[in-house]
Image 1 (tube, rainbow, N blue to C red):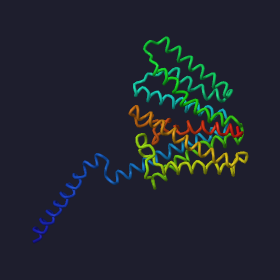
Image 2 (image 1 turned 60 degrees about the horizontal axis):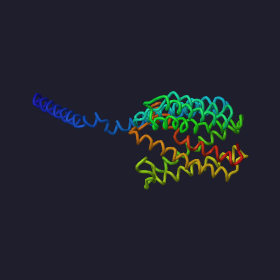
Image 3 (image 1 turned 135 degrees about the horizontal axis):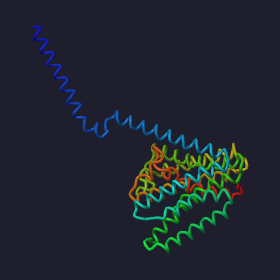
Image 4 (image 1 turned 90 degrees about the vertical axis):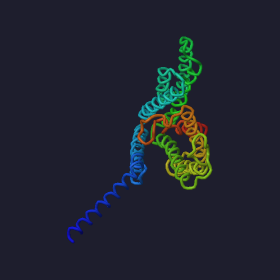
Length: 312
């Protein structure tokens, strides 16, 4: 009896092991593809942590440069503009264009420095130098075509000249007010992105631009505008008393709209070239241009509104 019981127990154990192995084998394909629930949860947590950490480092570096002074802000923006322009040229090459990167990247580096040195006059001089360099290159280089010249000139204007608006805002006042105004522009755009994501994820039902960015919704767009306006109004009420609340609300609205179109514009560029991200510089965020696309148009809109509103 004992031997028979042991034999039956052993057979039962073998069947149980066999069932476990069959179950494991049935999940092998899903495991290899990373489709198991545990794998998905771990992957999502890792992506969120990576995105949060890299975003926090980026935000901290930006805050330090803004509050140390206009020159450190200029150095930061010049470096970021150069990298954004480089990523833009990378997308253009993948789309079949051959920009003159030496000319374009040199202009990308000069625009923020010109904004810091002498404002609008120096920026105009850099634009002239850029156009002249493109013209000389085109005349002397038979292989170059007009499309290559166009993207060479457009690249630094789109990435660096637009980014220089942050330098102009920061340099308008060397003290705390200049830092707060520049920070407000950034916070409103970050707030716009965050609110658009949360509202869109919760109640988004109507696509904003399905062919360009399928994840964006009209509800998220409205939520983002609310977030942008809220940041500007709070700053006007508690931090920058010279900023009229009505002007602040208008800035929040216009900057929010411009930021969304900046995002969609870059998405359209990437879609045209068949790329997902402009680069992989910032873990969890893609390239720096992916991170800064909203800032380019939003910053320019903020600069003109603050200038015409008598704040700068």
